[in-house]
Length: 101
Image 1 (tube, rainbow, N blue to C red):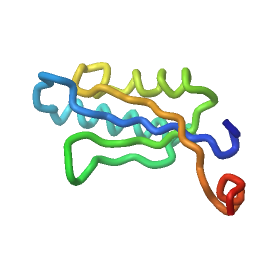
Image 2 (image 1 turned 90 degrees about the vertical axis):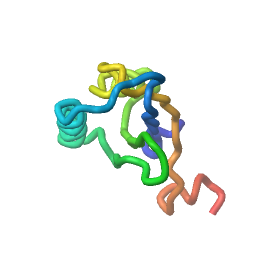
Image 3 (image 1 turned 135 degrees about the vertical axis):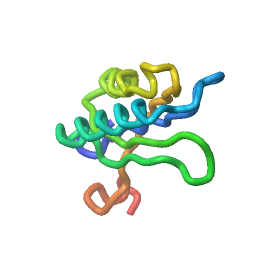
Image 4 (image 1 turned 180 degrees about the vertical axis):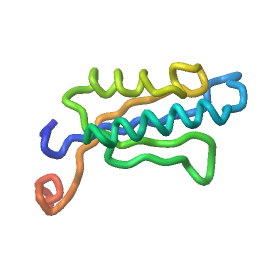
């Protein structure tokens, strides 16, 4: 994967049997997102509007690093959510839409 255009998508889905989220847990999650943003790791994040869960798009050097970032999310460490991590290539003018433009 071309690192200049590589990103990772973290899909957060409710864990089976997870209890309702507390305000404290939500604040911890938001604090973690702020930390990732300050580090330049976070590209985009937000909840889905049509179903439970949410998504983050991050910069990372490898799938292992992206997985570690996902595993450290307070929603995941609390057992509230499960994370799926996928590699993703940005299609844009800068890379001629993955060479197909």
